Image (cartoon, rainbow, N blue to C red; front, side):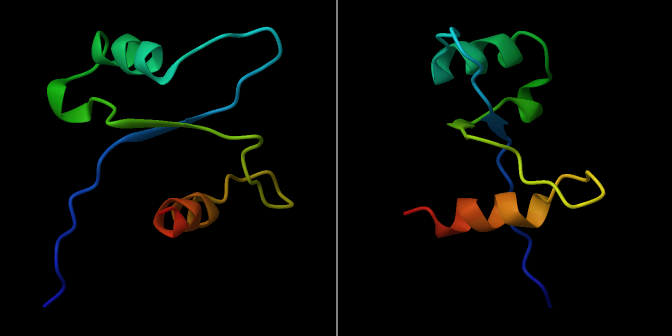
Length: 70
C-alpha cells in the first residue's frame, strides 16, 4: 500500500533587478490571501524556472532540486 506524504506549499520565486524581497515578506503576503491549509511554508529564490522546449514548466526538475537539498 503506498504511503501518503504530506506536501508543504513552497514558493519558488525569481527576483528581478532592483527588487529587495525577503522570504518572510512573501510568506506574509500569501498568508493574507489564502486559506490556512494553503499557507506557504518555505520560499526558495531561484535563477530561472526550468522549462521544456514547448515552454511547459518542468515540475519534476523543481521537485528533484527540493529533494536533493540538504
